[in-house]
Image (cartoon, rainbow, N blue to C red; front, side, top):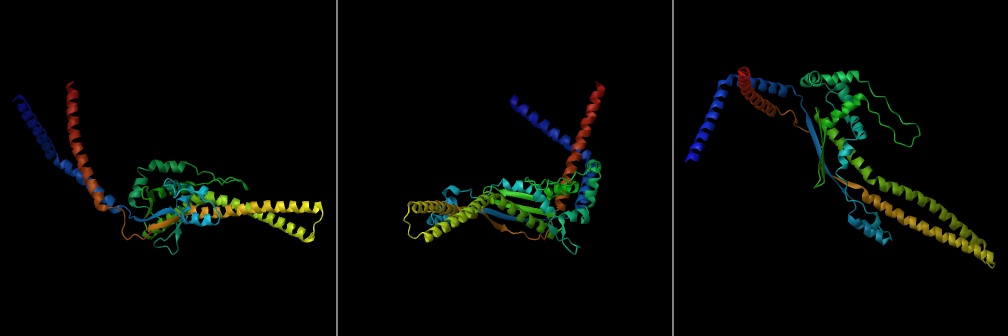
Length: 371
């Protein structure tokens, strides 16, 4: 019985607390309404003055041409006496490779030089030229630059441009890549405009580009797709192509040596049709031994050459485009209704917090004064 009375009293106290809170909010309804309206108008301002953006995307999948064990290529090779068992490779490209390619400086510098179709321009201009000479940021971007981003502006003015780096002429090492201050800023912007998504389970790769121009966004997405495939193809086949080049060089050397020995043997046989001396027979045996050795090495290299050619073919991935790039017809940003709703909700939450915070601060001051 006592427990039931305590529960009833607790429910009554909770109801009183909720009523007191609602009464507090109703008393401060004008303040809440004013703050909410201010944030709503701020959201309208952001929605109206945000620049339109368009997003173009493409989806493709990469797969190896040769299956496990070589597939049909292995069957054909076995008929010719060629064994592909020791030349197997992974079936596809590691998903971890693509983000590394997209974030690499050569990839991004190549995108900076991508020609884009810009409204009002008679000829295509590069991404770099567009953002350096043509693009005009919106009002919000300008306000943000000279308010929140003002320290960065001062740092950019004070900081000197990096020196241009050049590799020594004839050096075997790759040339050092030099990136100017302007290019570095453009690359940072490009990182926000190029998006890469990988489905590890199904092997799908999606890449999208977002720009203020609809046609330009599609062109940039297409260029990014082509570059990504080229870099991945080069990475995947680099080792097997290098091995193929080495075998081709050795094959050419041994072919030349074999032809020379073959001619020497034929000439000696023509000049000595009836060999009756031991020295002649010894010379013939020596030439025949050299011929047999050269033929064995030459034949083995010919097999290795065909094996490696098949391996290069097997390592070369196939890219199947599931969703080709298309010119977007609708803008992807700004979502004006969503922006207004977010600011309205934020304004209401902050206004309620302001009301209760003001009350709590007043109580704290009274208690502080009484102590």
